[in-house]
Amino acid sequence: MTQSLLHQILDPANRADPYPIYAELRKTPVHHEEDGPFVVSTYYEIRSLLHDPRISSDAHNLVSTGHDPLAEPAQEEQSELPPSFLRLDPPEHDRLRRMTNRHFGPPHSPHRVDGMRGELQGIVTGLIDGIGDPGRIDLVDQFSYPFPVTVICRLLGVPREDEARFHGWADAIAASLDPDPDADPAERGKGAPDARMQLGMYLAGLIEERRKNPGDDMLSELASAKGPDGTLTTMELLSTAALLLIAGHETTVNLVTNGMLTLLRNPDVLQRLRADPRLAVPIVEELLRFEPPVQLVPQRTPLADIEVHGVTIPKGSSLWLVLASGNRDPRRFENPDRFDPDRRDIQHLGLGSGIHSCFGAPLARLEAQFALSELARRLENPRLLEDPPPYRQNAVLRGPRHLSIACDGIRP
Figure 1 (cartoon, rainbow, N blue to C red):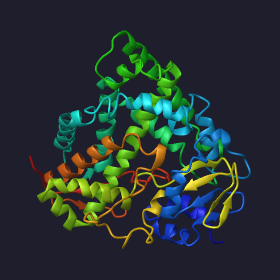
Figure 2: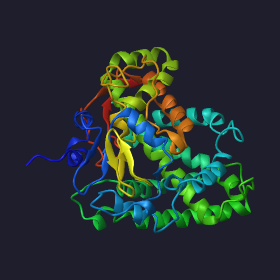
Figure 3: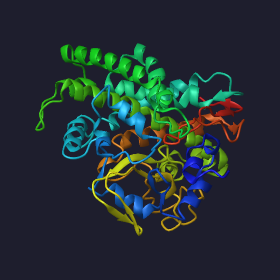
């Protein structure tokens, strides 16, 4: 029996190369299977919906009309902590995002991210120095995972001795986003509630400590600052801190790993980056189009009947936006299946768009630029030991679970 397109997207067997499935999906820009979500796969339609105020991110607006394999974990997630601003609509979304951004980016904190350049360089250097045997490197375990985890912990002010504790919590929470349509919903998200509870308890203690003894970290500022929008409640602060910790590294792990995999498959581009580290900027932008770490945005809900490409998507239905498919839409990008860092006008969807565009985008870009340029410079004759590598099951946060590479040596 032939699998439906939706099941093919969610099938872990197709994780290494979902792009032929996306190409098939784009033949029907609004795809709907019985009792399933409405799936939009073309660039202009996705971009329009990301900017449409009639599209809600609040799961409470979803009317249960069938089986959406991503619906249950989201509702479960909201039972432990209040929803983060990622899952809220204006005006609450705008208030919380504004309050958080005051301590992260312009205009109030313009140097927060840029001021971390020296620390980023130091973390990258330390991780590459500690790789050990150049003949067998697991880039995920030895570099791509510890790098962004360390960065986000330093940004928020998590003590260094506690950084390792986040690995298990993050893995369990990310696994709850894994949409397996054939799995028992209760089993699929089994470890996530406990992980979220432990993370919440830890953060509550850390927030209390920062209120008594504030430092110059972002969590201290969020805990004590008063601005035009007032102050964050303890529960709002908990929810926001958890979001920044998890979202702040899960996507960057995939961006760095997908990036190195793509460069090793395109050795001419890798050679150019080694010779000119400035190429890291356009390379990362093209990577966000070509191999985005977030493949699809699930659980959006129309607040009214909306017509898209001649199809009416009913109010209250489940809507998925397949960003990775839109990024390969030939109506928008010439030769979309070609990795081309010289491509002009890369208005990709790799970091979303509209009011829910990636909050941490400036930091993610900088992390990936530092990581890839230094790996290219320091690894001598790097090569893949397994292609394709084994992938994580997750269809939303797509990336290799391990990336085995070898090199002839590591330059100083």
